[in-house]
Length: 139
Image 1 (cartoon, helix red, strand yellow):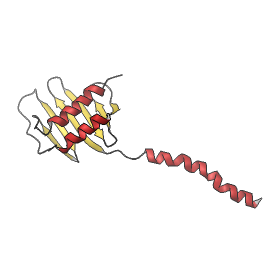
Image 2 (cartoon, one colour; image 1 turned 90 degrees about the vertical axis):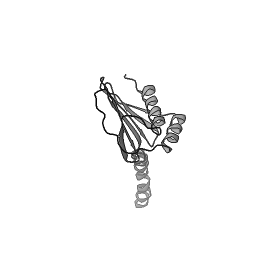
Image 3 (tube, helix red, strand yellow; image 1 turned 180 degrees about the vertical axis):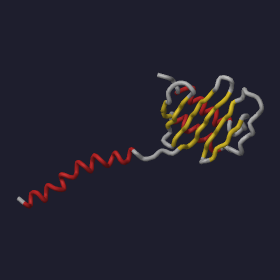
């Protein structure tokens, strides 16, 4: 009888190991690739698009829910291509007046705010705005 108990003990531990291993793989942290925040104007615009290393984005607007959607392979490829040419540079001074849009862009741990879009920002901002318009929809 002792031999059978010793032989069955390792088999009893197998189901526990099989259940816990996949759960650990799923909880791997995502890293932010790029984030765009658009704020301002008389209407009080407040949009946010954050794209992570898994190719999925978190989208939000001033009103409505926060939405998580994954980019298509073509969108993801195009965004990565545009990011290769992005130069954040320094933040721009806030202009006088009340009706202006602020573009806050975060990439590789750096953040800059612009009120006029430089040439290297336009493709990135355009792609992120297209993702926001295409995927953000309140339920």
